[in-house]
Figure: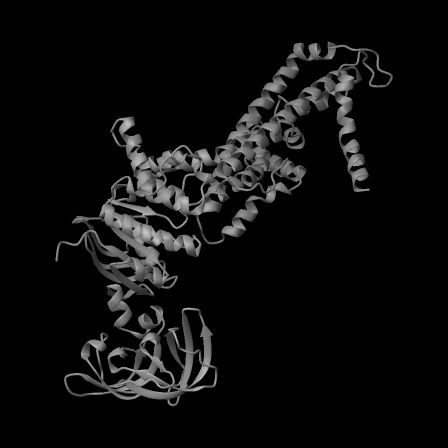
Length: 362
Length: 265
């Protein structure tokens, strides 16, 4: 592996008695799009702010590009930040905002003006330089904040929930633009978000944080398919959680799943490790399938009763009650041609597969 | 109905003030109708009265000093209120605003006792300044609170993130954004101090301020038209200063692109 651009070693942060960061170890590679994901209050923003230099760490080591960041203030770090509120300077023009970081740059004025124009063009705001910053829309402010941070060509761009203030449509558009921008400039991005979908869409790797700790750090697919714990599984996407019981055995793992029966799973389906005894078993709604009239399968089948139906146009979401399973199973079905939408109370068969089970630690 | 009340109220409020310029230009030493004719004699008498000049000088000195100190204190309090958080913040900020509703006579008497009896100091312009700062600071805080609360605390951080030091971030970002509030606070504190009477009456030393001097003049009926002339100038000056202060306050809001929520005018 190439030398990490950011290296964090057992970072702790206390606010008085409150233990905000509890031993964060983290390596971020150059050019990576890295996300810190977690519920509010999990410490993700605190971690981002310690990297930016706005917060001191209580203990631990931080290196950026091989340089120890101890007592290096924010204005001397090779990082720039896009704030949640954008923090656009309202008394300056767009061009003055974007060029703010070049104040101490010794280059001649004309060159700096050109750099500003290029930065504006990069975020799609060509020709907006003379406008008053406070008159911009939310999406435009976001772009100005991006241009202002990127013009300094930082080693790392830190983004603190940059899309949370935008409406859904604008947010999705900016997600795509951010990914494209990151690829074209090649700068390492660290994104803080509480939106798991946003993290999955945009990131190369994601660290899921809970209560000041990293619960799991992996690429989006691993995180989704192989969560290492119940709280990660429940935070990322939707997951049916069933009680189970692991009995030791063989090269794989044998687990009794409530309502579904005994199943053999591979060891990588238990990424959090396996201990014999009671456990939780997860299965995603899209890996379960309703068997409609006349459909047959080689997969395993259980019977149940439709408890609730939510019709979404392209998809239908069912809750199906199965004997022995405490909570109804969530099942999502694509509305393909010829597929009916079942009524509540219909008896139906549900197909499932041993390969889509995840044995969850804790 | 409401309109009728409003008109009556305005007449009640401003009719006495309207008498000031009328009699200031009236050619007669008795304040009574009918008017005697136009003159600027009383204004020229103001011009040659050296005791009045001293009083005006005192008042200007006191008002300028008061404005500067009250505004400096106001900046500190408003910034702390908007950006910092500390235990007991609400209570402390509430207490800071208390002099706004404290009777001035009480402030005056208690300060007189503290200065003379407890500290054993001589009364001077500085004792008046101290008391005026006390009553002006809440006004200053009220004005500056508006300016600081509209500020996003992330803006100073953003400036630091872009390479500026803590001080230059304050100077380049926060200061220009709150400057209209500062100007407005300076002008209002100046105006309040300039025509404050009760405290000045208790705490001036040997040389009176202008309101105290005017009060002294009232004992001589022949001097009344001169007082009228002086009053006319003061009213004009107050109106001009308050208008400028309000102009700056509104410009500040417009600059930061936020909606207007109150103010003094």
